Length: 389
Image (cartoon, rainbow, N blue to C red; front, side):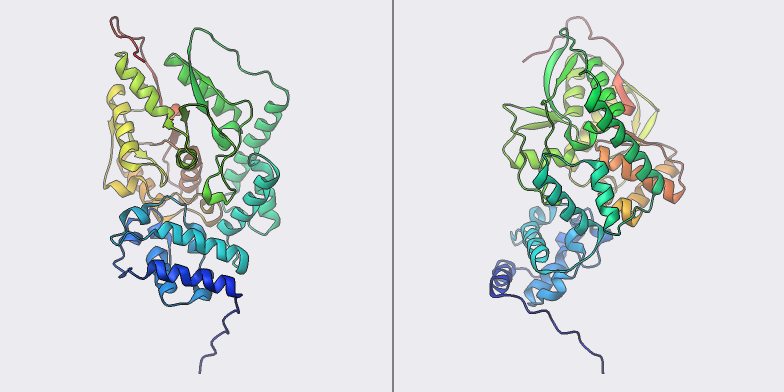
C-alpha cells in the first residue's frame, strides 16, 4: 500500500484565504481556455486550469507545491479569456503569496522572485551582477554559461560607465521625447547608446529620468514602481509597459513612436535583412506589437514571415529560460526561423537574450535582433511632410 505524505498543517489565516479562493473559482467548469491561451502553456505541467482545479478540490498542499505558480509571467491572458469572468491571474498571484509565506518550494523562478523582492526592498532597481550572484549562491546556476558571462560583462560595463562617464551630449536640434529605459537597457551601455542613436536618426532626443527605478513588474514581487512620470513616456520593454500602465502611467513602445513618426514624415526605414521572423514576447499586446513590426517592415521594404499567431508570443522562459534551457515555444520559433532562413526580430531585450541563448543551446544558426539592431531611419523627411502635435 502506497504511503501518502501527510499534508502540512496551515494556520487559520492561510486556510481562510484558500477558502476565499475556492469561492471565487466555484464557477470554473474546467474548459481549459485559460491554459490553451497561456503563452507559457506548453511549458506547464499543471497550468492555470489544473491549479484552479486543485483550489476547487481544496488541495492547498498540492497547489503550493507546483512550480507552475512561479512560471507565470503575469501577462493576464488567462483572466482575459475566462468564459466565467474569473480573475485567474489574480488567483495565481494570491497563491504565490501563500506559497511565499507558507510553502517551501525550490525552483529558479521562485528563488528569483525572492531575491528580486529583497533587492528592491533595499535599492530602487535590480543590479544584474548582484542578482545573478545571489541566485548562484542559492544553488541555481545558468545552463548557458556563455550567455551568463555575456550578461555579466555587460552589467559590469554598465556599472563602470554609470560611475565615471559623462552623460551623453545634448543635441538641441532634436525634438525631446520622455523615455524610460528600464533596468536591462540601462545596464547595457553599448545597446543603450545604440537606442539613443537610432532615435536621433528619427529626429528625437531621448530624455530619461536621472535615476532609473525598477518598473515594479509583479513577476519580481517587488511592489509598485517608484517611477512616476509627469506625462506620457516611451518605453522599450513590454514588462515596463504592463507595470507602469498598472501604476497609472501612459506608455507607448518607442518602436511605435519611431515607425509612426517615419510614416507621418514620409520617411522610409532601412532593414538589416530582406526578411525576418517577428517575436513580440508574452507580455506584449500581441496583435498590436505584430502590427507595429509589420508597419516597420512595410516602410523598410522587407518581408515579415509569420505562421500561426501564438508562435510569435509564446513565452521565451523569462528568468527560467537561462536556468531551465530553451522553452518549447522558443524552440519552435527558432526552428521556424531556421527553416525560413530569416533572423528573428523582437521588441523585448530580455527576450532577445533568451532567444539567443536558446539558439546557442539548440545549435541553430538563427541571428536574433533587438528592434534597433535591425531597423533604422533610411531617409530624410520628404518635402511637404511635417510633424503635427
